[in-house]
Amino acid sequence: MRKVVVIAPTFNEKGNIEKLIEQIFEQSKNIPNWEIHLLIVDSYSKDGTAETVRRLQKQYKYLHLLETEKEGLGKAYIRGFKYAEEMINPYLMIQIDADGQHQPNRIPEFIKKIENGADFVIGTRYSKGGSIPQGWGIHRKILSIGANFFIRLGFMKLKITEWTNGYRAIKFWLVKNAYDYLKNYSGYVFQVAFIDFALKNKAVIDEIPVDFKERKFGISKINALQYSSQTIFYVLAHSSFIKFVIVGLIGFWIDFGISYLGIQRMHQAVWVITLLSTESAIISNFILNNFWSFRHKKIEVSSGGFLPGFLKFNLVSSGSIAIQTIGMQILVGFFGRKLWYLYKILIIAFIIIPYSYILYNKFIWKSK
Ligand code: GDD
Ligand code: MN
Image (cartoon, rainbow, N blue to C red; front, side, top):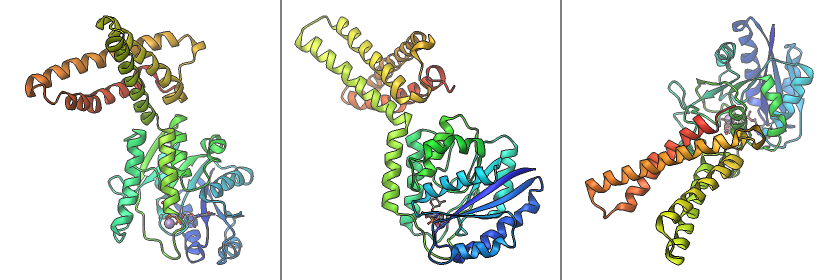
């Protein structure tokens, strides 16, 4: 029998915890091949949450309690992971909120996805079949939907529809690999960091739609301001896509700067300067992308792949020069020259950026 540990962090969840424990152990009958353990990680709640758990431990053999300082949701989870490794040594870990917002009867579906080969299954509120509470005010809806949309676009991983919800199943080998990385994220942003880590470590990711119910008792512990600023900062600092766009902008200024100096100031032959300026931008783009934007899959100089990579990069870049030239010609042909700069911006934003990003990922910085 494989072991699964469900981890539920709690801070003042006395009103919710008993029902959660009952409902989770009720699921054992639906997953006969699994031994289900439940670990409550309580940050010294003041309302008696831990006492309730201790009372129920007499009834449930596989109910565990870990009491920790209040250091944020991420920290509570990491402590839970370590405890589970030592005391239970599970094959699978499931994260769940303790306040009734996540329904335990979905556990068998998470497990099914794992049995079918996924390493990391996300419970998503934002794909068909998932939901957020009807009763949420417009502000909360916009905040939650907006945050997920921002993260999706920022990482350009459109297949993943939910980054923040805390209902997930993750194979324990991946959890163990993630310790060192995740310990830097003590708050709720840890949820985003975990998916980012899984993606960059080639985990097989899958989703199931889930409902997010209204909290039954008590109040949310999230600090919206701290959470959104940490999330924005995380995405800006870790998104290959955003870095790739920044690298492109730097390349543009190198190209422009050299052209300005060579043509306007030094009066050199335009073709010589253009060749020099575009190639300089290409070199800068290649190096910055390799050592920064796509660092997690960088081509090592020692691997012998550097030069072929650079040549392929030149080929893709020639493609974008060709696309821009032809595109400009077509638009100017149709609509005249007056708004040329607008055409250029549109072509770059909607054709060149997706074209290069996709080709870089497919041919140059392939997933290892
Ligand atoms: N041990 C511990 N320590 N538990 C905590 C702490 C803490 O510092 N902070 C929160 N929790 C527990 C809560 O008791 C609850 O069981 C769970 O973590 C989720 O916290 P809520 O306060 O209910 O947050 P929410 O419903 O607003 O959170 C939603 O967004 C988060 C961030 O995206 C949910 O979707 C979460 O699953 C998600 O992580
Ligand atoms: Mn909640």
